[in-house]
Image 1: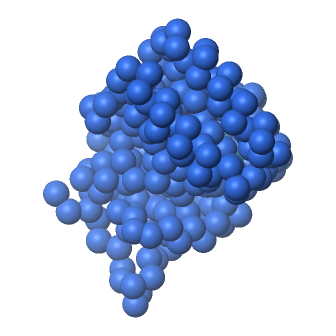
Image 2: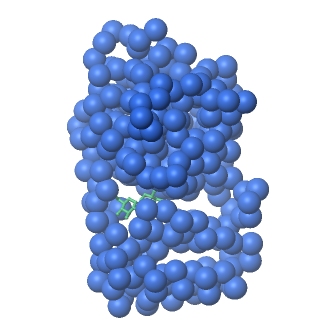
Length: 264
Ligand SMILES: O=P(O)(O)OC[C@H]1O[C@H](O[C@H]2O[C@H](CO)[C@@H](O)[C@H](O)[C@H]2O)[C@H](O)[C@@H](O)[C@@H]1O
């Protein structure tokens, strides 16, 4: 199925329309709602953002979810007030369903404990490099230490030999060791999971995200004839619409909630 046509502008993706009442809106977190920070715990959440998300969720009849690489606990630590909002964490490995039920990621293999310690030893050589443990996932970040990239890549390739059924997932100045082959959950299957149930079902899915891991979700919403919105200018991408940066995403959400209703 083809996605909803986006107006073409000389190869530049167009800005998305204002949210419509029949949308199911899926929002990535880091690099989309929030500007990147050197460390995952240093992100700044503008005061109006939670309020706008809650308001927009109400306007969409609850059909709004956060879909992130962060764990659900980390999402809740960052946003606090959004604990009633459905969410997918760890790139779809765990979910908070619309009725509040939780699905959990697979248990980490015992060998991950040693791998985690070894990764921290690698990171010590690169001040600013971060090893983040998220359940069965291990994220190796080099945003604040670009020189760590090659060492982390080599480390991850070697770690795969002792982590059964794991794979490496690339991201923006990060790579992640995570369980599961090609058929394991990702942000696309997370969107499909939400779309199979009320209040998301029968709505037009719209996914807004910036990173490689968001491409799974872009492909799914395209297949549903929804809107795929890339934040930034990463290429290539399956996205058909674009917002330039997280500030533009926040302004887009704020404009939608500044009215009494979303635009029909
Ligand atoms: O899917 P997302 O919501 O975009 O989450 C992706 C990763 O976000 C976090 O890391 C990224 O943001 C940090 C804060 O800006 C930054 O320091 C780091 O370099 C980025 O990779 C989070 O820590 C990861 O667990 C997520 O997978």
